[in-house]
Image 1 (cartoon, rainbow, N blue to C red):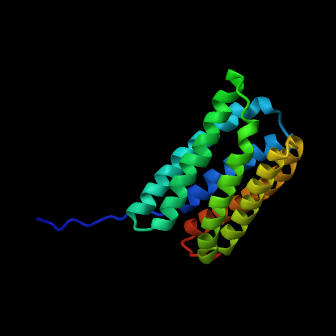
Image 2: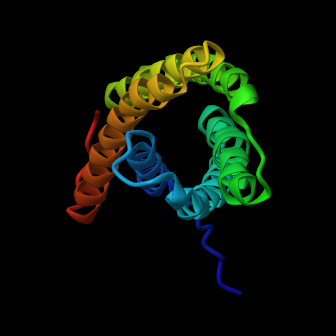
Image 3: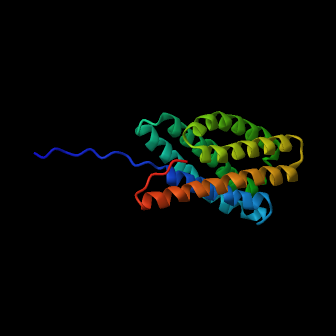
Amino acid sequence: MAKEEKIGWADPTMGQLLSVAISVILVWTVMIDLVGKEFLPIVGLWFLCTAFFSLMSGLINMRRGEEFNGVLQAFFGVFFFGGFALMFLYGPDKGINFIPILGYIHILLGIILSAFTVGVWKSSKVVGISLIFFDAGLLVQGALNLAERYADADLYGGWLIGIAGFIMLFAGLALVVSTALGKKIAF
């Protein structure tokens, strides 16, 4: 009987970066009023896709023995993208006003993501920089929401989160191109 070759799990990082970039850039377009809030359900669908992909990426990374990346991806897949997807999909239609609690949600997620940013920075300065912008965006948005400065929260928090999304897009595309060319990049 022939010896079976063990096939390992592929690294989902490039897909993870691209899925997060798409969702973050889409919510940025709503936050800074490039498109209206009536598009939140569409953004919610993208967030739902990112939540699923992030959870799967997290599980794959845990299976590969990469505990830190696995927990980061699974946690934010469920609690950030999944939670906001449900809010975007069901809140407006049900007349639910999430604004009073959003400040606390943003601050808690910003603090938690800041702790993960330290570990990400160690392995990738580019992705680490994007997460610093993301952390700042969440914290700024949270603080301004608590101060009842809702328009400022979307504007300033939105731009910081948008910058993070574009950096993630760059990093994800760089990984796609380098992988297609059979090259390794360190960033």
